[in-house]
Image (cartoon, rainbow, N blue to C red; front, side, top):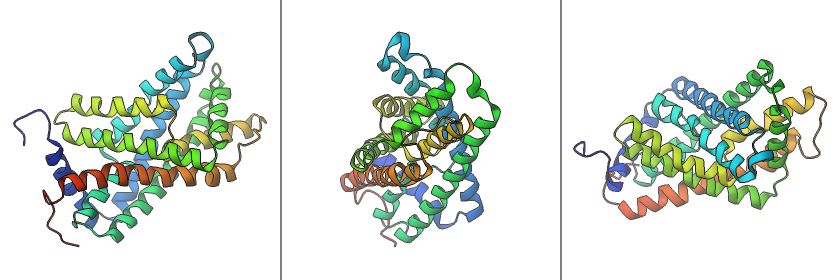
Length: 272
């Protein structure tokens, strides 16, 4: 397995299943702290994409602005993959271990609940840090951040759900490829292209939105610049709920289930 620069798809599935077994023994405290870190790391990528793309559309066009935002956002997943953290969207791949019978679905659900909670707290805290740092006073950062958040809260349930599916399909493929890569440059490239694609395309990532939308809310309240759709209710119910459901479907059905079906019998002992 180590003689070439990457794992084959079948070997990658085996590595993902082996990694999934950690939920059987990992303590709550360790899982929660790692999930906080993931919230911070995705926040770094999200705030960088906001700053980098704040004034590009006016002179280079919307497509270039989205490409630039997508090109810098992947630093978040790079930090998660290389430094180690528990990210809810990436943990959709743990369903592979459950499908192979190596962990129980109950253990998987417990992991998801803890990780989702930690990601939420970490992202919210990071959004508050960015607000208090007052970096948004530079250029058009504040208005751009509010605009991003407002647009996300305007999505209908089906739109948010489908964009969530498409997003985590790519995120889990990025994690799949990063698992296959055997060196740091390979892992970074594996993270870059799928994540750049989902951000530039406008797909919806629930953990990123846990930074984007609260940041817009903090700014709109602090600047007395309320948006028609930008409310905490719309953040949780209109955006976060359907996006999270879509992220689960995208990761579990289109990546975990698909590659379990293709490589079933290649790994796993069948233990429940």
